[in-house]
Image (tube, rainbow, N blue to C red):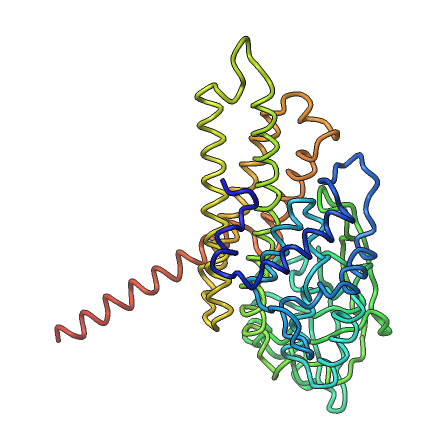
Length: 402
């Protein structure tokens, strides 16, 4: 396994070498070693502000000054390196969910977002899932009612991250005319997306304690007759699914690479552990079954990392494969979870304590196997795409024969 897990990417993109050095130097300064649950919790929002001051929160978008490389591959590299230190470090670098108002907001909203999220390092959240329907986009009930000169947002989103740290949220909802409220079947209404500043009247937060990913707040957002400017709509009415698929195809790969970075670090730590520990006169690493399991974990992590970066390269070229990105996230987080679980096992009883990073990694990655779409659902997205493609091919062949 390569030293960092991203060496093949740098071989293809040597222009990213300087960025890798800057990211590594930042992490070495502020997160010199992987975080353990017993450690004092880093001030993640303050670290994001420092990253912004270092020019590391806009690496996925072109800067007005044109400084340095920009793109999803650069963002993915940052996520992988951050994951090696801690999964909660995922919010330090890049624009994150601010990419949506940057790309789809009005000129004024896009400029404001750049000033707040990129230049000042503030955090943007996303609110999609709902308590009754999870990630079923068609089943959403959060309503954005058009009153002519303004919108009114009502509903509940959760469970979601960043409810206390974000200065604003992108909210996915159903946009309807006020005359259609209570009449129209919401499952037939296309998805829309709207920007909601957290200081807007009628935005309420409710937090809860998650099993993992505790570095950021977690809970519900409640919208009680929240009045919004019509310029806060992202894109056009009904563009929500397009925005969702475009953004989350890349974001799922980012979360994958965070987990794969954590897994790569766990494998390296296990290599050192099994080489230094002995069973009788034999190093633990020399036992064939141990070596085989470590090799399997390393191969799975290496392959998943390569797939994620190849998909990011396609996205940077304008080619978004929603189904493949969905399945890659499921495969990567599953592989990362298995690798960290093995690492915990190879650390013996010490691994089952808070004195190593393993148990925190395991809990964090477990959460990211659910976040942004549970893995079973994401695998089925690829299966559905392949079955549809197969059916279309068969139909085309039948037509050709006639």
